[in-house]
Image (cartoon, rainbow, N blue to C red; front, side, top):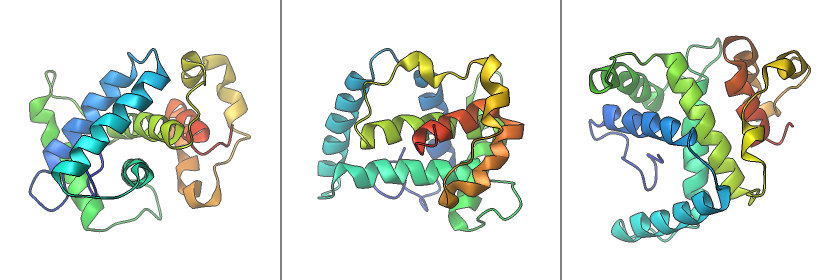
Length: 180
């Protein structure tokens, strides 16, 4: 899930496939037991994908691509959100992927939740924070009130709106951006 680098690329009429990757990663997130293994697997697969495309770029560029794409999805429909050819393609993919999901339901909120999971995991890999407790990635409902006092760094400020619409997504972004 890095459409500017090693993932299914933008601009190839594959918006549904880009979002299907996001959907699949959202499901896989729920089954993570070992972040170190995930980090090593990501590094191995990204090297293979990069070699197929003759890309000689550090892995952090691929991870940043995933984080930036996740950011674009999470800020969709918020006042002041980025509106460009990429967000248009991502919106199209969110609409189109519904026909490839068993119950046919996948909303912008579902995409934001999955994108938050991807942003969190890729940030942890990029920053080599792989010793974090997996259970700590899940927002304990008793701490929802506490997140009201947390703000994301300026470049992610628009995502503070997730506190209301998806506290769990906000919590993952707070971990990703080291706000908590």
